[in-house]
Length: 191
Image (cartoon, rainbow, N blue to C red):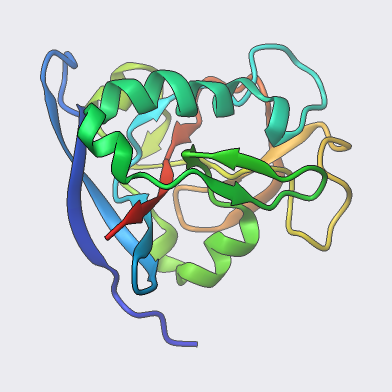
């Protein structure tokens, strides 16, 4: 399969340089678009957060990272006007669907929207300062749950899937409390 090179847009702002004192425009890759909306994912790995603060089997619906993305990140990265352009969307998960303004891609989406090479993503200096692991500037980024849709039930496995620095999707790879994985937010944006 040939993957098109996604268009990039600027929308919102978030600390990205060393020190994190100033916000910079966020670059988003447009993965899919319709007449009135587009699915976007950040071009860079913007921050470093655990999936969940306690070591437990957890679903996307109840994890700490989902709460952080839809509250702290949402209010910090987007102005009130920008927030109105983000479409709260039904996010289909293995167990319970959620309504999210900001979310993570799942393994199936990461595989279908990107080629092996284009799944690689650079870590911002800000995320590195906050503990993000990187090799040659590329980091590891969280996916929404453990594995692909045809695998075991969400919340039954001990780890969460992530995309490795080389673009390989690691299934059930990282413990939920891992503090070195990066965050690559996704949004549906009204056009």
